[in-house]
Image (cartoon, rainbow over all chains, first blue to last red; front, side, top):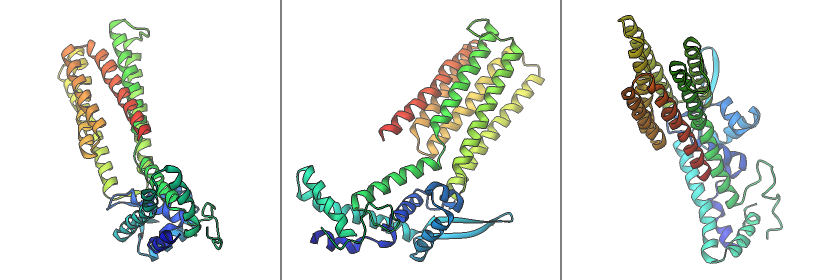
Length: 126
Length: 218
């Protein structure tokens, strides 16, 4: 259990919550200069406006997303994008997740053993 | 293993962390799902245009040669062709606009510029037809010019789209449409309608199947 616990600090708690992980993964698809309107993001993520707003605020506080409030004609519009820092954080997080799995699979030649080992890790993470 | 864990990682609670394997799977599936939702489904677009070309050009060919299962009088064949084209234009436009909705930035500018290229290209083709007809071009000349010029615009725009989005299937389709249009022009009127229907429409349908099969295996 020590291997997993030592690696734990690498997992970013801001990203690791499932809803925000999904949100970051979805936003990472956008090109560097692309932004997505709040209602479209809401539709893609299947979240309520309140829920999405709350998650975005946490990500914005961490500097991972940029929330731009603007106007289209007279109607206010909100556009969301991943910041450079957010993209980097997601890459680091992905690498940390892979690293958590790698020692386990490298140590155990058989698939069964690695599955058993990974079943242990949730306890360590929670 | 850790009895003090407050929550099961598999709980649907938003704040419950996932185990690394699940988290990586979520990242991957969310990425590909969002990617698919933000770009037009080319299977739909190629499928609609394939069916339109196949049926539309075969109806024209049947009406001018009197062969085939459905021989309409020329005015009815012409309006059937125009109606099919109009439906395909609307389906393509509405679908692409919906998929790109809410996007701002480079991708949406690229998409809009590309969309306008189609409108400008076909606006120019329409002007050429009108002018050629006004200058006394015969029905036979018009019959060769119309599909060939339209095919030229379609082929070139697919080449451009394929190059811009690094989409080999789209590039290949563009090349195929150009070859088909040239072959049709050489075959002459009204055989060119048969060529455009079978090879052009067929090419679109093959492209739709290729993209569908590739998407499933990816």
